[in-house]
Length: 541
Image (cartoon, rainbow, N blue to C red):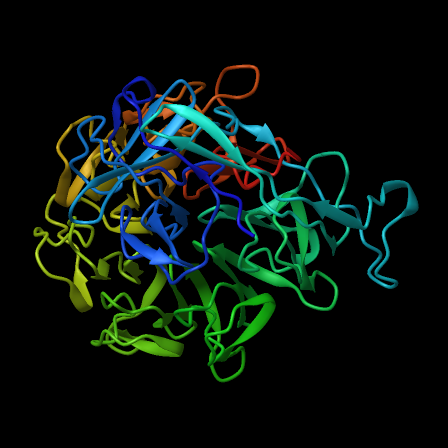
C-alpha cells in the first residue's frame, strides 16, 4: 500500500513563490500512472486525486489533499511555495485551487561533495573482495501515512498495513572513496560516469531501471551497469536522460536502459528494462554512432557519416522526422541526412533537440513554446530542423546543449550564448525577462574576459567550464543548491562553483541534471551537489 503525505497549505506554512516548479514534493508518495503532461495536472488514479508535481520533465505523481480554502494566491499550475522546511505545489481541477505539500525536506548539498565508488568486482569470478563486501540484502518498510486536516489544522496519523520486502542488491562500497571518471552525465534524478576500462557506474533514482544494474532499487552510491563492465563490453560515451540512460559501445553500437514508455530505448518495444538493451539498427556495423544524447523521453545519435537518428517520444516533433508519431526504433532526422548537411554533435532536451553541423552552424527542432529553438519567435513547433538565428553570434558554434525549455551554445572562441525560457535566470543574461527567442550572450562569458570550453543545460539551471583555471560557473535555479555556490539563491548571471573549503573548483567535465550537478575534477574523482532526494549526488546518504 502506498504511504501518503497530504496537506492543505495553511497561511502560516507558505512563503514566497518560487519562480519555477520544483523537482518533487519531497517525502510525498508516488502514485503509479501514465506520464503527466505538465506540472499541476490533476487526475484520478487508484481511486484518489493526484497531482503531477515534478519538473515538467520529471513526470512524478503525488496524492493531493482535498481543500476548500485558497490559502494564498495560487494562479499558475505547478507553482511552488516554501517556508520553514515545507515545500508546496499548486494544482487545480477547474473548480478549486489545491495545495499539496510535505512537512519535511531532504538535505541537499550546495557545494561539491565527493561521490562514492563501487566495490571492485573480480572480472573473472564476478565476486567482491571479502574485506569490502557490504550486506547483500536491503529491507525496507513503508512509513505511516500522515494527513493534515485543513479544516481543524490538526494532524492525525492513519496507520497503514506495511510489509517488509527483501531485495538482493549488487555489490557497492559501504564507504565512499574517490570515483575516477573520464566522462559524466547527469539525468533527471540520477547520474552516470564512464570509468577506467570503459565500464559505467550509475547512482540515484532507479524507479524505472535507469541505473542499469538489474534492479529497480534506488542507490545513493554508484552501482555497475550490467554487461558494460569494461571487460566483456566497453563504452566510449554515455548520456543520462530523464529516466533512462544510453551508451555507445566500442565499435559504434548503442545500448540503452530504463524507462521505455515512449520507445526511448529504441529496441522496438515499449517495455522498461533495468539492463542495457541493443538499439535496433545501431549495431556498429550497418550504422556506427559517434555521438549520443538522451533527453526526457527521446534519444538521438550522430552517425559516422554525419546523419542523425532519433527515437522515442515525438509529440512535439522532437525526433525531427517531419512527423509527430512516436518511434521505438531509430528514424532519420530530416534535412541532416549525412549528405547535404552533416552533424558533429546532437543534444536532446525535454521536448526539443538541437545539433551542431560540421561548419559550425546550429539547428534545432521540436517544441518552441518558450523560444528554445532560437529562431526569433516562440510560435509553433518545428517538425524538421531549422537554423538557429546566428546574426549576433560572431563565430561558429562549437557545442550545444538543449535543456528543459532553453538552449545554450559555446562558440569556437569561448563565448556562451543562450535562448529560450529565463524565469529563473537560466539564460545567464542578468535580466528578469521571461524568455529570449534569439541567442543572447551570457554575462561575462564573452570569449574575451572569460572563455568557456563547455556548457550544460538542465531543467532550470545551466553550468559551464571556464578556460585557463577559471573553474566552473553555474546560473539559474538554485532551490536545491544545484549552482554549487554555497547558498540556495537563484542567480541570473554566472556564479563560481565552490570547493568544500571555499575558492574555485577546477573541473574537467561538468554535467547538469534535473536539479543537481556533477563534475569530474582535474585533481581526480567526481563531486556532485544539489538535490539528493534520490541519492543522485552519490554520497552514500
